Amino acid sequence: MRHLIESLSWASGFFVVAAMSAVLALFTGRLQSAALRWVSCAFAPIAIAYCLYWSPVWLGADSSEYSSWAGAFIVSWSVVGILASAAIMIGVRQDQQVKHAKDA
Image (cartoon, rainbow, N blue to C red; front, side, top):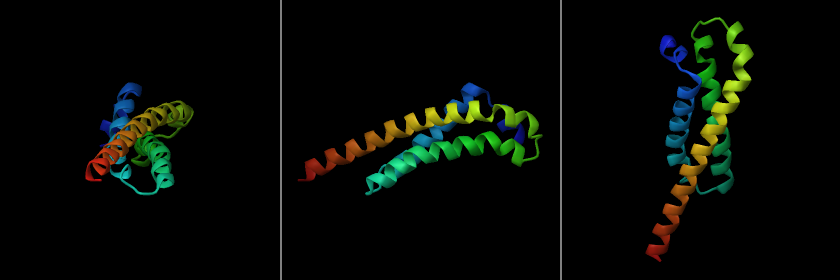
């Protein structure tokens, strides 16, 4: 598992974080509370990027090389995840509004 995570490049990390954030947004986009939806839209991708970046260290890799690049990877992966999450969440909300308009 550690070898798989360590083999992720900067670009492949974008796709992993964006995909995981988008899938999570499919579920959190249905929440009734707008504040909770947008908090999850912002913080879930940050948590995913943080966990993905530091997981090799948690699995036993040397942390010295990871700490110097943490900001660049975590911030860039988080931004992509937030954009993907927001796009999916907006789409889910629009879909729900259309369904409610048809029912009315």
